Image 1 (cartoon, rainbow, N blue to C red):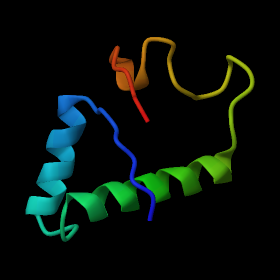
Image 2 (cartoon, rainbow, N blue to C red; image 1 turned 135 degrees about the horizontal axis):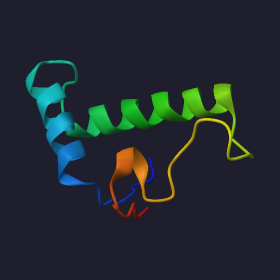
Image 3 (spheres, one colour; image 1 turned 90 degrees about the vertical axis):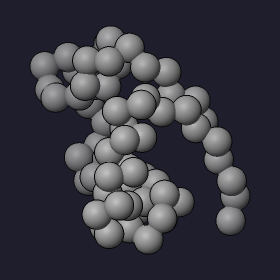
Length: 71
């Protein structure tokens, strides 16, 4: 399986850690893999938003944060 290195905001890392500690996932790797897969499925279902009138990501980052996502 290919490996990917990402940098995520601390608040997302804390949420992933909490899900693992609550037993939702066996470990962080499984959590990240499942959450990305779920997000991609949701994205494919809804499709990209081409106009400014629909819901989508804000210009200042996801959920209002100025975070960089590195893949």
